[in-house]
Length: 68
Image (cartoon, rainbow, N blue to C red; front, side, top):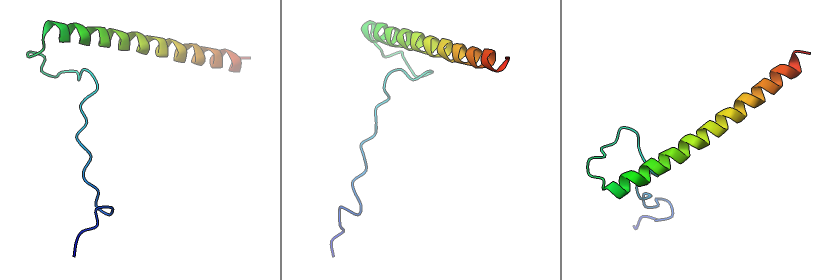
Protein backbone atom coordinates (compact mmCIF):
# COMPACT_ATOMS: atom_id res chain seq x y z
CA UNK A 1 0.00 0.00 0.00
CA UNK A 2 1.52 3.30 -1.12
CA UNK A 3 1.43 6.45 0.97
CA UNK A 4 -0.69 9.18 -0.56
CA UNK A 5 1.60 12.16 -1.26
CA UNK A 6 -1.37 14.53 -1.01
CA UNK A 7 -1.86 13.56 2.61
CA UNK A 8 1.82 13.94 3.45
CA UNK A 9 3.33 16.68 1.27
CA UNK A 10 7.08 17.02 1.16
CA UNK A 11 8.51 19.42 3.71
CA UNK A 12 8.93 22.95 2.45
CA UNK A 13 12.53 23.92 1.79
CA UNK A 14 14.22 25.83 4.58
CA UNK A 15 13.85 29.56 4.12
CA UNK A 16 16.96 31.66 3.80
CA UNK A 17 16.88 34.67 6.13
CA UNK A 18 15.88 37.77 4.22
CA UNK A 19 18.79 40.06 4.90
CA UNK A 20 20.90 40.56 7.95
CA UNK A 21 20.35 38.65 11.16
CA UNK A 22 21.59 40.73 14.10
CA UNK A 23 24.49 39.00 15.81
CA UNK A 24 25.22 36.66 12.92
CA UNK A 25 28.79 35.86 11.87
CA UNK A 26 29.90 38.45 9.34
CA UNK A 27 33.58 37.51 9.14
CA UNK A 28 33.19 35.68 5.82
CA UNK A 29 31.41 38.56 4.06
CA UNK A 30 33.11 40.47 1.28
CA UNK A 31 33.38 44.26 1.31
CA UNK A 32 30.56 44.48 -1.23
CA UNK A 33 28.33 42.24 0.89
CA UNK A 34 29.04 44.33 3.98
CA UNK A 35 28.24 47.54 2.08
CA UNK A 36 25.01 45.98 0.82
CA UNK A 37 24.01 45.00 4.35
CA UNK A 38 24.80 48.48 5.65
CA UNK A 39 22.59 49.97 2.93
CA UNK A 40 19.81 47.51 3.71
CA UNK A 41 20.00 48.19 7.44
CA UNK A 42 20.13 51.96 6.90
CA UNK A 43 16.98 51.75 4.78
CA UNK A 44 15.30 49.65 7.46
CA UNK A 45 16.27 52.17 10.15
CA UNK A 46 14.71 54.98 8.10
CA UNK A 47 11.54 52.91 7.62
CA UNK A 48 11.35 52.28 11.36
CA UNK A 49 11.86 55.99 12.12
CA UNK A 50 9.03 56.95 9.72
CA UNK A 51 6.72 54.37 11.29
CA UNK A 52 7.60 55.54 14.80
CA UNK A 53 6.94 59.16 13.89
CA UNK A 54 3.57 58.23 12.36
CA UNK A 55 2.58 56.31 15.49
CA UNK A 56 3.62 59.21 17.71
CA UNK A 57 1.63 61.65 15.58
CA UNK A 58 -1.41 59.36 15.74
CA UNK A 59 -1.14 59.04 19.52
CA UNK A 60 -0.72 62.80 19.91
CA UNK A 61 -3.78 63.46 17.75
CA UNK A 62 -5.84 61.02 19.81
CA UNK A 63 -4.64 62.56 23.07
CA UNK A 64 -5.53 66.04 21.85
CA UNK A 65 -8.95 64.88 20.68
CA UNK A 66 -9.85 63.31 24.02
CA UNK A 67 -8.56 66.25 26.09
CA UNK A 68 -11.53 68.36 25.01
